[in-house]
Length: 74
Image (cartoon, rainbow, N blue to C red; front, side, top):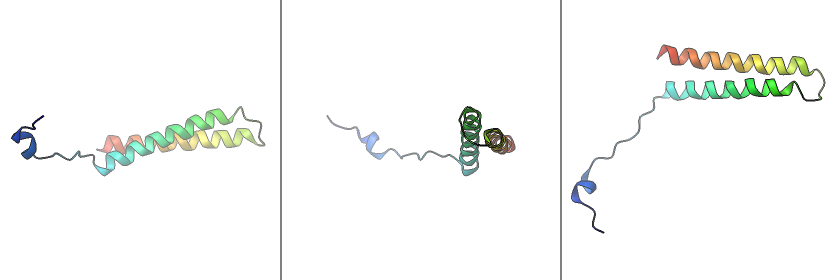
């Protein structure tokens, strides 16, 4: 099968994903995982479980909030 000349000489476009958008996406996803893990931790039989799970949940929620703030600033 022969490749057309236009396909050989066509310029390749690099995908552009700016750093602030990538960082905010990472913050939101990480915060969501922490919040979900904090909600799951409450059912585990460990010492001082309420404090640990609430801490994880709050930390995840705040981290997601920071990521969403960065998104809104863009």
